[in-house]
Length: 166
Image (cartoon, rainbow, N blue to C red; front, side):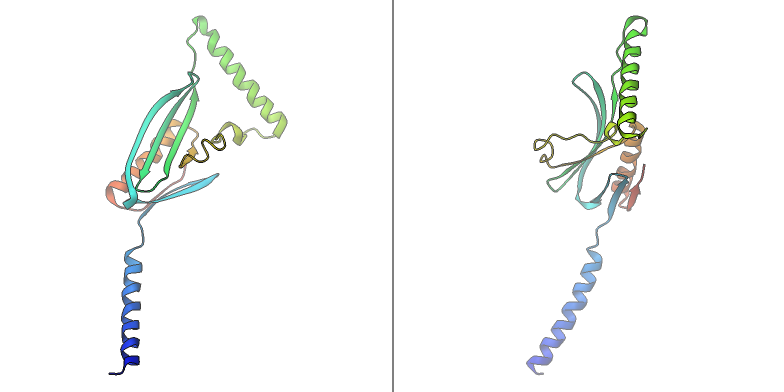
């Protein structure tokens, strides 16, 4: 057998093995699709999925799901709701409601929009939070975060691909 023929055979065998490995190496993914962006993660790369609730500056309550992976980036999916003060006679809640109404009214006057993304967007402080190795998605409600958690955890446990769309 000539050297040229041997190299040709090795090349063909190499390509067929590479083709088989390329198909086997296709990652099983969980995806989340949002109007402001998309997130995809290999189920094999997920090391933990968690939810928790916390308060920021005594002003808002955050409900968050975190997906940790073998990589450097952490994905955060969260909802934010204002903490309602407990004032005698309900006066505190009336003030909070009036402030929220005024903010929404001001946004509508400036932008002409009734559902302004600024009121529901992730807010970052450059460079501190933009370089913190996190990908963040703000969801409208706590229930949306719970649904996303159930979706990713179910896919992770079963090894089945899935997509979450709020």
